[in-house]
Image (cartoon, rainbow, N blue to C red; front, side, top):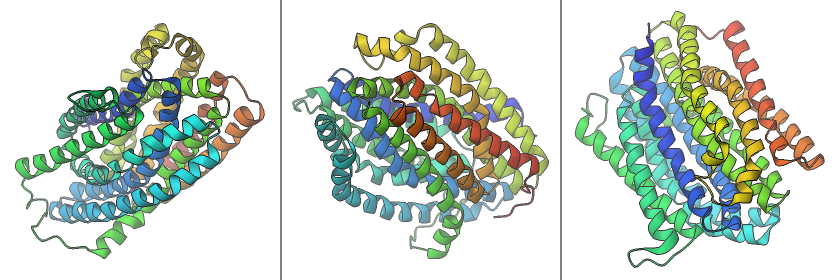
Length: 440
């Protein structure tokens, strides 16, 4: 039986790591908010575009994490190392392929869908450098899956601090020019982020080699590609990869739709997104904790603990997030001023902030339940839920943004549609689905 203290012990390092990792995009936004409106708007579009590609890679690691958690719960520790190594080899190949395809296809795609020539040029300048961060991320996401799966999440906090501090320093050097480096603007933000991800990856590797008994977890000095292990992971993670890709692809469509309303509206949406990301990280942290604890519980034949774990994770998420939401609601412009000093954009963002705060109340239980669906190993069903939510979300985007061309605050209401569908479908699965005896 997991106590609140046990859940918090796993959740808070994940929370810190997610907050710190999100600060990469937030740091880029904050720097671009002081470079210009064009750069600020471009960062909104291209960071979500990059995130869409990244999340396909991350989706594979989520599937691997579920396997690792199940083997950890079973006590089959020696089988974990092969999962991690094969995952890294596979993702490095996928990351290199995505990076090369992006260099070729992305300029063509962005030129066709971005209406502002200035924003298009800024997007390409950023993505030309940023895309290579996928190679470092391929290793880092599998290291993260390993540490979360074995419930040793403390390293995530230190890794994220290193990542964030590195990103702030490198961004300052390359964006504005320092230490003899010329000011590079939005390209400098991309270079700084890639270098920070490289430093964070090295920390994960050095920590694992120096602090853990690698043989205990089945890591060996001989590294060879094993298609059978990859096939096993893909049987579970391919649905998660598609699910994560769909989630962020439709979010990119949302930002693209806002871009067609105007550059100022896109800039407002970018800073609201950055503020939303900070509040959303505790939700993801408790959802990820619920997923790995559900996987461990089922691996240990304790299906009766699953609903208890989910309820406690939801309650703890509300306890952490609601006080933060109240503070933001009281001082919205002060909170948003972290991302820009443009008075017009700050004033224009207030209504959107209140809409954003509202849908987070639904997203808390929705996200925890949804991640727990994957934690049971039913990633195919999770993809089905995602498809239904994505279709209705896209319909709402078309109706509210493209057809009505509503105010930017009203545009944010599409999030209510998405999270309500996710919550209803996931809750129904745990009430009526046959998840108790799923094996991996």
